[in-house]
Image 1 (cartoon, rainbow, N blue to C red):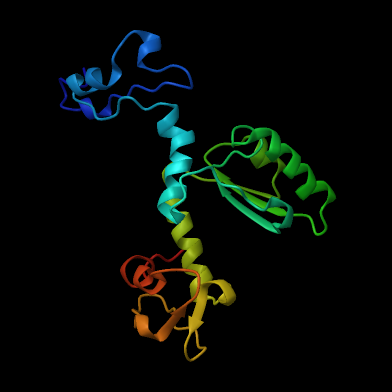
Image 2: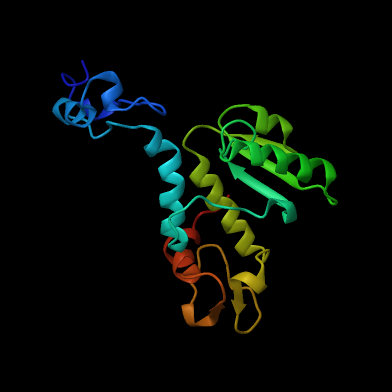
Length: 199
């Protein structure tokens, strides 16, 4: 029925860990292509493990799983990273959660963003339940507020050469006016994408 409507791209074949093409006796990629969909196979590597490794490689050039300093973290803002149910490495996460939320002083504060209630959302200080597909808009709005209200970490991000916050809604900034430290392209990002992304 999808092909009859010209919507074969809406067809998706998803598989979990250990349920690849050989397990079901079908060569999934050609099947999806023959049907007319680029969305096959969407498997474990697409939605879990390899996505994490590839995103880290794109960020810092290191193709590996991330290792975070949870023991010294004072605030976690998580978008759909279901820390207590599905986020790897699971055993370590449970141990770190117990330390951050029970032993550590001050206790690590947690804001969790997702489209549905789950264990991580229930155990967080704040759960923001959003409509599917709006997480990007929320992240851009948060970044916009951090910059326009001068809340960024100047020791990490950098600062304006004159010390005055020039992040104003809708206004472009001369990249030469800002000295970056551990970031790259912040002003270009502001000028092309973020300046108009108001909350």
